[in-house]
Length: 394
Image (spheres, rainbow, N blue to C red):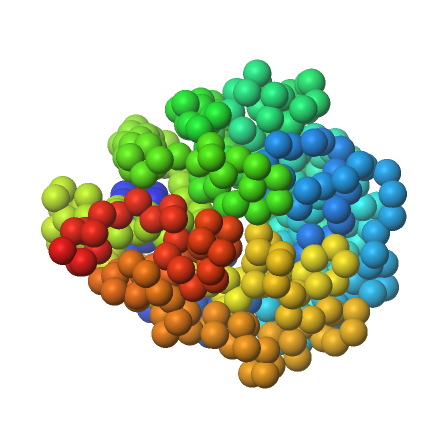
């Protein structure tokens, strides 16, 4: 996760991380990426059920009706273990988490144990009453996914009218004082919608937006040929930086982040070296705090069936099941070879990654993409758009 607004526009300084001690229990959520005691943020895909049929769904979600493998009391026991372990954030996701009737009960359980609870949702099921419930249980953040303007979004989600329902969900959250942000997954079908999303965060007064790079997982694997070219990715990053700066200069700053491609950090740094070399030095320091991709280290995932994964996109490798063994024991088990290696990927990555001068601030990028593209966990990430010259190979 690369904080474009904080790095490019100066909304975060190196002293911020020092001020908070870089300990995740003390850090505000926007600085968790700089924590030195990286207990994982845990994504729980609490259901595979969903009321939409998104073409890029990494979970390959099923119909809305049905049952879930993990019941309420089992879920509370999982949360108890995570809280005692020191995981700072519980991110409830799906499928669509709001199809579970016990979501607010479980979110309240997490906040009662001292964790921060957030949800990732399509927003269509957030009624006024549900927004009030979520506020009352102490939810920290609601991330709502949009794929562009109304026509593009409804096409992606395959349910007419879901854009308007998502906008209503945003407004219902805002009316209750819930912090809400947008999530947007970039691909060739919707790259032209990036300006539309910036207009939405401005006009709706949404404080935060995350631009996700495509990960080749689930139904997202079907879009692998529709990922942006390297040149297109660079152009989109420049646009995101330009629009972020524009809002900042207008006195309407927004928290803008890019997610799932840590080449964005060096790319931003190289641009800033041309524009403001002194500020570039500070950015490089923050990027070293970040340490790049943290799958299997700073982030983990529990699937709807209890399987533990390195992140929510990489489901073809399981380290164990929380219905059989606590997450805390699984996560710290040195006998799980792949999980142990992921905690220090730099020693194992190959290809261009192994010799890249930015390895310490990228962390080898996404192993899920490398495996999907090359059939090799430790190969280079095909979505890295930096040239050989830029990474120091020539």
